[in-house]
Length: 114
Length: 113
Image 1: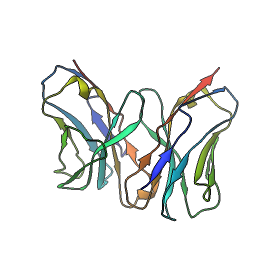
Image 2: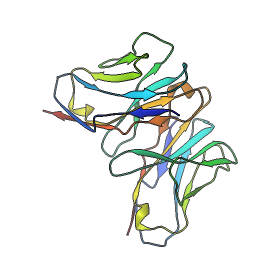
Image 3: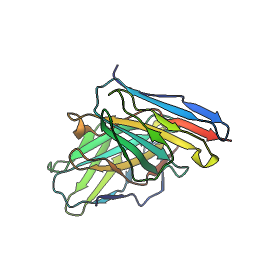
């Protein structure tokens, strides 16, 4: 079944550690997105990609980085995690032909930095 | 610039009753799409219903329906016969063509048994 997968589901990590949040989709979608969801549940776009080797920063400034080497894979990396990075991170994708249908979301990664 | 506003941070309803969640938006385009998403606690965000701006008829999906008022730029979601499984955060979203979705702030819906 075509879907979008995020790993890990939950992560608790110490300050200063490097982490990578994984996001993969099997739908062949060209567009992928990362959102940060704060405790108030509002969604903030932090990165997006419209295709391989194309990445852009979103509306909310983030210290994280992303890469898009393969269509199906859009990992997010934090070089040095800090408590302020504690949040829920949601990955989403959309395809050109499915643009009318909005986004497909992953289950999210809940990150806690201690 | 596109904006989406959900003015109700929280709503509650008795099981089996009907509830309406409000959403207003602003866009300079005439062709766009509107969506309602549902995010249950600790679960995946899923699409509930969508509406094409060029269609006058309000979209309906089982117990979920919308009241789309294009001139007023209003897009409310009505949930009939509320069930405990409807408890979730609900997000209204707007999309123009292939551009990014713009989300509202969300409304937390509680269903009282």
